[in-house]
Amino acid sequence: MSASLLPSLDGRFGDGDTAVRVAGESVSWAQLARRAAAVAQHLAGMSAVAIRATPTLDTVVGVVAALMAGVPAVPMPADAGPMEREHMLRDSGATATIGDTQWPEVALPKISVEGETDWSGPQPAGDSTALIMYTSGTTGLPKGVVLSRRAIAADLDGLAEAWQWTPDDTLVHGLPLFHVHGLVLGVLGALRVGSRLIHTGKPTPQAYAEADGSMYFGVPTVWSRICAEPSLATSLRGARLVVSGSAPLPVAVFDDMTRLIGQSPIERYGMTETLITVSTRADGERRPGWVGVPIVGVESRLVDETGAVLDRDGSTIGELQIRGATMFDEYLNRPEATASSFDGDWFRTGDAAVIDAGGFHRIVGRQSVDIIKTGGFKVGAGEVEAALLTHHAVSEAAVIGVSDPDLGQRIVAFVVCDGVDGAVLIEHVAALLSVHKRPREVRIVDVLPRNAMGKVQKTLLT
Ligand code: MCA
Ligand code: AMP
Image 1 (cartoon, rainbow, N blue to C red):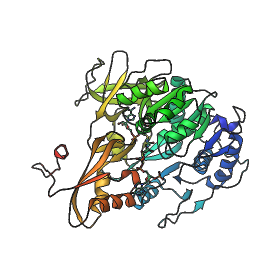
Image 2 (cartoon, rainbow, N blue to C red; image 1 turned 180 degrees about the horizontal axis):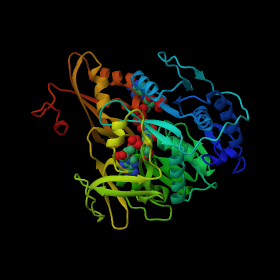
Image 3 (tube, rainbow, N blue to C red; image 1 turned 90 degrees about the horizontal axis):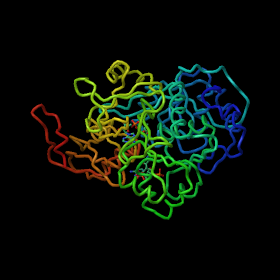
C-alpha cells in the first residue's frame, strides 16, 4: 500500500479493533489491509477493475485492494441497469469485476473477496490513476472522471485541515460507495486521516441517531429527513461537526439543524471532477446558503460569458471556475470533452455562483437545465430521455428537474406516447439505468413545445 495515500493501513495509527464498520461488519485497519492484500495479489497488472459498490465491507476491501495493486478502480452503482453497466465496463476497459455481480451479459472474470495475506506490490506513483468515477453530463452517456492518487490525497488533506479532522474523530455516514461523497471523503478520508469509520449501510435518520460519531456526512435530503424526526436529530448533539454537501442545503434545513443538533452545519461544495474544493471551516463562519472558502491548494474565480473575470462583491453572478491540486486528469476516452471543460488550467464548473469580498462562495444554480440534482445524485436529462425513447410506445421525451421539498429536485418526464401509462415508463427507466435515475413523475402530453429550430423549449414545460 502506498505509504502516502492511506497511512492507517500502514499501521501509522495503531490498530483499533473496530476501525472500520460497514453495515454492522467491523475490521481493524490491519485486518482490512490483509483482506485487501488477498484481493490485490490477483489484480496486479490489470488495466482497471469494476467494483459493484454495494454498501458493504467487501466494497471497501475491493477499492482498497485496487489502490494497493495500483489498478484503477471503477465503482459502479449497485443497481446500475444494463444500459449503464455496458457503457461503464466497455468505456473503462475493466478486465475483471469485484462484488456480487450477477450481470448476465458480463463475461469478465470475477475476483472474489476472501482470505487474508501480507502481499505487497510496488508503490504506485502519485500521478497514477486511483479511481474512474462516472458522472452524468448534459447529453450522452456518463463520462469517466479519471482521478489520480495525488488529487485525492490533496483533497483529503485540505478537508482535514479545514475541518480539523483527526484520528480522534469517528466519522459516520451511510452514503453510496460509488460517488465521491461516500467513497472518497467517506471512506478514503477516514483511512487517510486515521479516524474511525461507521458506515450505516443506508443514510437513515435512525441509523445516524444510533451511531455515536463525532463527524457526520450527509446530502441535504438526508439532513432534511433527520430534521423531520426531531427526537432523532437531537441525538446528534454530541457531534463535533455535521457536514452537508452534494446539493444546495435549503436555509430552512440549515436552521432546523442549528436548532435541533445545537450547531450549524458545515457546508461544502465540489464536483466529481474537481473533488471538494470549497468549504466552511470548523473554526470559521457558517452562513446559511453559502458554502465557504477554497480549501488549501485550490483557487476559484467567477467569469462572465465572454470569459472576463468578475468582481467578488457578493452579488455579481458568474460561472464558477476552479483550479488547483485536487483536479481530475481527464474524461476517459473523451479528449474533446476534457479540452472544452477547461479555460487554460481553470475548470469550468457549469455552476453559477457569487463570491463576496471575504472570499465566501454562494452557489446560485446550475447553468444548464439538463443537469438535475435529485437526492444529491447528478442525473443528465439526456440519459433519461434516451432510456425513455427505447420504449416502443414513446415517440418524444423531455426530462426536467422540478423543485421538490425532499429531493431538492425530482425528475419529471414529459412524454408523447401511445397506449402506455406513466408507471410503466418509470419502471422501464428504473430497469435500464440506476433506480435513482427513474422519473418520479411522467406527464403525458400531445406535443412538446419546440422553437423554430425544432429544439424542445424546456422552460415552457410545466
Ligand atoms: C424504488 N425502489 C425501486 C424502485 N423504486 N427499486 C426498483 N425499481 C423501482 N422502480 C427502491 C430503491 O432501490 C431503494 O431501495 C428504495 O426503493 C428507495 O429508493 P428511492 O426512493 O429512490 O431512494 P430515496 O429514499 O429517495 O433516496 C434518498 C437518498 C438517496 C437516500 C438520500 O438519494 C441517496 O443516497 N443520495 C446520496 C447521493 C450521493 O451520495 N451523491 C453524491 C454524489 P433500497 O432502499 O433497498 O436501496 S458526489 C457529489 O455530488 C459531489 C462530489 C459532492 O459534492 O459530494
Ligand atoms: P457531481 O457531478 O455528482 O459530482 O455533482 C457536482 C455538482 O453538485 C456541482 O456541480 C453542484 O451543482 C452540486 N453541488 C455540490 N455541492 C453543492 C453544494 N454544497 N451546494 C450546491 N450545489 C452543490
